[in-house]
Image (tube, rainbow, N blue to C red; front, side):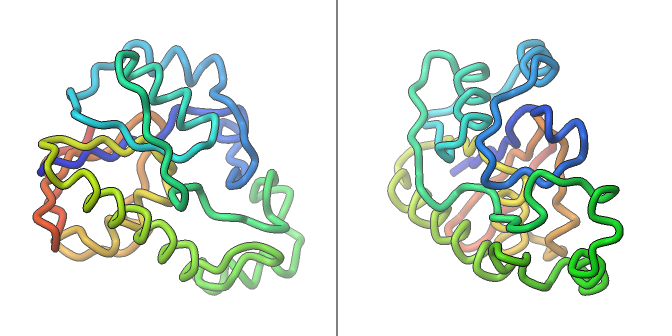
Length: 186
């Protein structure tokens, strides 16, 4: 089956390079306008997290389909870093430790990267199994969610950060239940 991963459109926090995980930001006017001019592949089902930026994106790009909200696909809980950008955090000793760890340490008062990835992968697996008979499934989700799933399933194997994708862009993949082959970027 084909699985399409689309990162939600740009929010105000995204444009300022802020850590926006659990903050339920809507799309910015720029994010909305960038999505309106793009064509996305047809799909049988649209799956999304319940966060505004994802539901708004799915409604803009798939206006004739009601999105299915799946718990567990939400972005990481960035804890004390939430809503801040690297400039604002540059003197924070916890942020320095997190950066020096290559992003592997848990976010202070937030989620650990391993727990976040497990949560996203479990929600993906649940959805892929539930909609197994469909030809094309679109996931309109968060950048970290996409990166988590592709790190586990994409071939050839690559690192989590290798799958970073811009707002309003994504990947078209083929999934056989064991691996995701990336066919193209969108």
